[in-house]
Length: 407
Ligand SMILES: Cc1cc2nc3c(=O)[nH]c(=O)nc-3n(C[C@H](O)[C@H](O)[C@H](O)COP(=O)(O)OP(=O)(O)OC[C@H]3O[C@@H](n4cnc5c(N)ncnc54)[C@H](O)[C@@H]3O)c2cc1C
Image: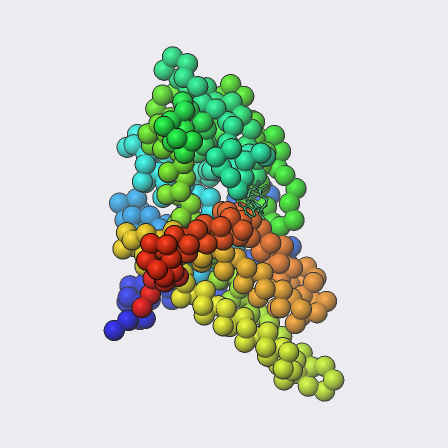
């Protein structure tokens, strides 16, 4: 029998996180005002205060192993925690499990040496530093095999040259994990390596925060120049030529982590929409009595239900060390797209109020748009999903294994 009951320890953490978000995070967000941009000097202080409270509540670092001061939750536990955190951008920051640091912490745990982890992972795990992941370039985004940043040997050192673009959190980051082309490997995919570059390296130049439609988050989305950026031989993360493979190791669970947080955002939008539909009267009746509004609420509920099941199944595959790539891609595409729909409907139900900065919906709306682009645009994931459908039909005569492989 399939058991949809959550394990008792996960249930307890879910309740604690939900209470923490309601009692601590949302009042903080409200006090910051409706146009909280999750940036600026004041934010660091606010986040530090929230982290003290998260530590006191035993909720800090849910994603990290206990040996690193965390709660040791796997993908399933994190799916639950992240959904609760999704309701406010401040919640993941409070628990120290926000992008891009969460993905970088996982990657360092996976590939870092003991020394690298003391230098780079320790400050992240203690919430003392921020980091960024620098892969995309102006001319190489959806197709990372066009990355032109190079790393060349000079004695024992490596010297990196190139430009990166849209690097989240780069301004003020203590370090970056940079994807650069090293010696040509046996294939294009094996030609890239990862490097740990300190934020104060004179060759790592954060040129500007790129103005964007959504909120910036700490450190913005930045354009960076790597100019004769010299790093030591011990700065390579993983082996030579493993950059592409390790980037995928990072991106798989990181994509799912985003999808989990989006469910939290969509749930908050639906809650606000339903509340407003009950309260707002037009032409003598509450909006909740209108069939169109009921359809919007119902469709949002259906989509959230499907999203939750997809995420839990993909998280289960990750925890069981099974191949999760198709399911994570399908979850990423579906949930990023329903997020846009659910938020749009909620905004419409609120009319002008929804469009105003007095509600968080216009911020959710602006932020949601990027979800269909970063971590791989929907179209590229669809290309990969369709390729798997065609491959399984050719090999197994049916696409069933490429549709979640459930009974
Ligand atoms: C808010 C935000 C944060 C980001 N943070 C980071 C970060 O921290 N680090 C980092 O390295 N990068 C980051 N990125 C960059 C992100 O990974 C890229 O934007 C993404 O990979 C797409 O690349 P691109 O923007 O160059 O689009 P392009 O590669 O120019 O593609 C443009 C469009 O073409 C279409 N397209 C592309 N290929 C195909 C195809 N095969 N079939 C059909 N259609 C296709 C898609 O619609 C796509 O949206 C971030 C982006 C955003 C918006």
